[in-house]
Image 1 (cartoon, rainbow, N blue to C red):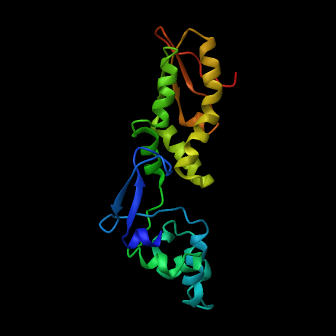
Image 2: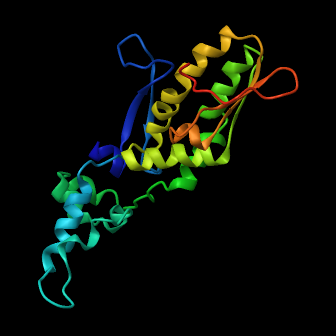
Image 3: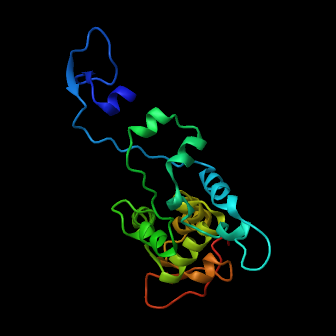
Length: 214
């Protein structure tokens, strides 16, 4: 790995995922290749807080130890010393001259992840219900409620699917049983467990709201 980062001639198999005697190889020089290394770095925030809190004190105008507990972007204060404390060897860190931390996801970012990507979770469920000729819609308030639940559970973007599946499971089972259902609207009250989704029949009119579990 160190030789790859600093630049070396490497033999790479052609058209195969593994290297063996039967696969032809080609030589690639990595000197002019940009390497971007990333990771989640669990417990890195605790290392950063420990370094920043070394100068904490007591009394008026003191720098308190819990000053950075609510800092959502604490990782942006990471330094080379923190990476070394995390366990990375200096030889590896020295070959990566730029250290950058991304911003934590906020509520608006999670809502965009829910609906904007080409293969967004919301679009997947809409496509599934289209197979039963049912239109699925999410109110903007419902999307924000889902995002807030993900933030509260500290699950990040990966937790959005599990939260949506919790509320969509019963709906996905109930809809095929009723041919009269033409549209389902997921409301904020349903996500907050204060009510049910809005169910619209294929003809004009609206059925009373009901819980998806019924």
